[in-house]
Length: 83
Image 1: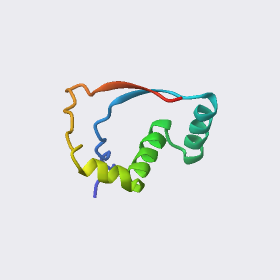
Image 2 (image 1 turned 90 degrees about the horizontal axis):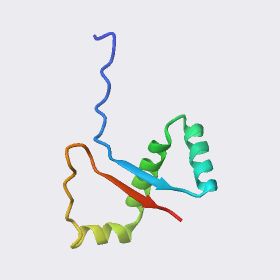
Image 3 (image 1 turned 30 degrees about the horizontal axis):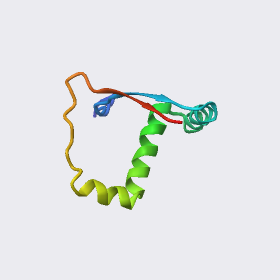
Image 4 (image 1 turned 30 degrees about the vertical axis):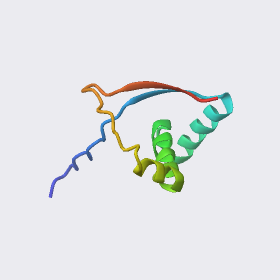
């Protein structure tokens, strides 16, 4: 039995730049602190939850909107502005 465990494979990530209002930013930081994780993890898991729960989105996604853009070798970078 190995003394040290191998790190789990990290999924390929993409950099996303978000603009949040002060309250959303503060709550994101506090929730990450509460979970003892990174804000990036909170955002990723929250999005996964929304995607899983939104039946209309799932229907829309399974329809004609199945085209997946291919990321470049360095990972895509895009910006979102949330107001």
